[in-house]
View 1: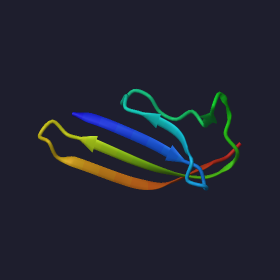
View 2: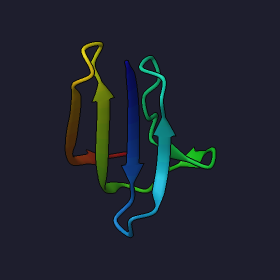
View 3: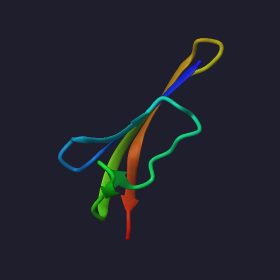
View 4: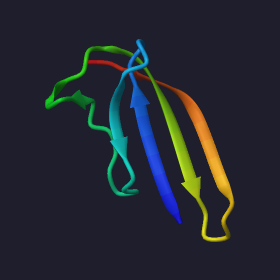
Length: 63
């Protein structure tokens, strides 16, 4: 089983990636607070039975 979470800014630049299920995005990019705005995410998880689940959506970062 595995997991991949990617977060992208409005220009499509990847601002966060993890393959650790305990780790989430803290709203930073390169160690600095990311600007307020809408960010897209993709989450791909492989379950123990081999089934792959993909979720996509948006999250709004407010400061």
